[in-house]
Image 1 (cartoon, rainbow, N blue to C red):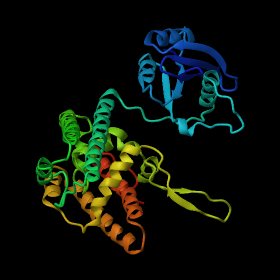
Image 2 (image 1 turned 60 degrees about the vertical axis):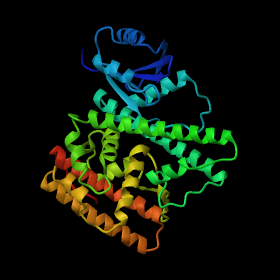
Image 3 (image 1 turned 90 degrees about the vertical axis):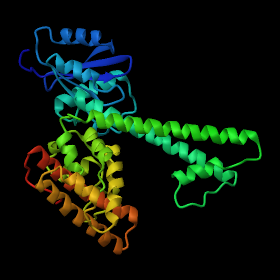
Image 4 (image 1 turned 180 degrees about the horizontal axis):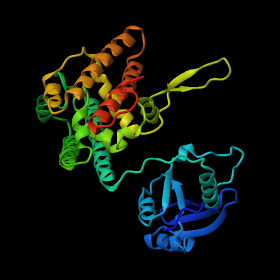
Length: 376
């Protein structure tokens, strides 16, 4: 391949077709190349047509449901490619016409101007772990929905469990003793029970597959180090690393907090400064597991036997960071709670600070040193 020669290609990618536009030079207008099928053969042909002499081209397209197959094919053939964040693409509010042709030409022009923000693209190994993690999450949602349906059926038929906890052995034994006025209701309850057991079986199966898949994973040392933190189990750590990849690619914790949408929104003008709820931008999967983990810091700081056993497999420096994090976050939770804030807001604030210690442990486990170590 020859050196890159200021040719920018915008792709509007769909399931069946790809609209292509080209900008040749930084100050030229984009030209519409045409529409091609979204197949590997058609993409290879396009690369040869746009780069007959082997020039390195710079492609871009929006992140979307079609994934990263186009990215992998383009980069494997020696060209540059950016997958850009759709929510950060500049848009003109006065333009009310949207077509594939216009979208492709706009992408090519904005890419040439340097106005697009690229997203992180996982490699094949990373993408496989992420698919496992998301599949387990989908099955967990199915299990939760099945529990809700079974519980609602029992409640509207006047069957109320008086024990301490639902979905325990005692709860299942209680359901086996239930009787209904009509035979059809027995059938309905049994079908709900079978649906719940099947959903639970799938969740357990995916968790076993995750445990097998992370053995020998390039990020396994970081995963084991994150387990030293309170509230972080294997599934939580896998979700974090599967979605974020190399956490040390963020220069400081504030970048990671902002990326996860855990920072307050703000609308300020002149001397007026107004902050609102968190932005909720970025990866919602990671934000969810962090907030779930943050609830564990409502109790006093202590090293339980489970945490001690997991921490023994990590370095002393990682253990020290995890313990400092636990002391700070437990104290932070109580301080914010006594100030009169809602528990949900307190938990979100704790999750935001928890990100700093996650980042610090990831840096330590990866052997990389940045300017700051935990929260700002």
